[in-house]
Structure formats: structure tokens, C-alpha cells
Length: 147
Image (cartoon, rainbow, N blue to C red):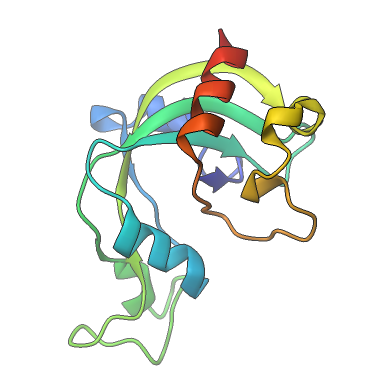
């Protein structure tokens, strides 16, 4: 799961009550569907810092809730407001994310240099999704690189 550290960093998540943050603001249907349909409580997550000086995996986390409506879609003052969303028919869902560990920064160049990660979705050219699945083999490889 990608986050801009100016919005929510691994440090912010670790400092939050219960080390848990709501993953607000996802406004891509494919990323929403990953959260809504594929994530389960307790699933491991790679906490990835994006749109910053040094993008990369900055920590580990886990899914801490079932999916539920993202309240920011209903708030006209929010940058994530969606005028087509209603409480009866929400368009955007989120999960809570519990940070479990800050790691050394595993940089984008390091990830790209690893042949075992060549097919990793987040590394594909043109990928703009903030949430992408990770295969069990990719997970093991990355955990091994983090030491």
C-alpha cells in the first residue's frame, strides 16, 4: 500500500492510537476493489512511501479491519469528496491499517534490481495504483531483503 509520507508515513502510523490508521482517500476503482474484495483482517502489508525524494518500502503493516465506507467521500470540505456517493450507496471503501514495524528503506532501485521481483505489479512501468497485490514469493523475497 502506497502512501505519500507527507500525508501518512510509517512513523505517523506507528504513532497513531493502536498504531492504526484508516486508509482514506483511495479513488481508483481497481485499488478500491483490492481493499474491498481481496484483503482480509491480519493480511500482511508492505507500507510503501511514494511521491517523495526516496520512494520505497518503509515498513510493515497488517489489515486491521473489514472494509467499510470511507467517510471522506461524504464530506464536501474534504479533498476526497465525491458528490455521487451517498450513505445508502457509498462508492469508496477503506480498511484500517495497523503498522507493525518500521524497516530500513528498501528503495525502488533495489526492488527493480532484484530479478525475483521482475513481475511485481507495483514495479510495472506506468503503474499508478496505490494498492497492488503481492504474491507469496514476492513477500518472502522482500522480507528476506529487509533482514
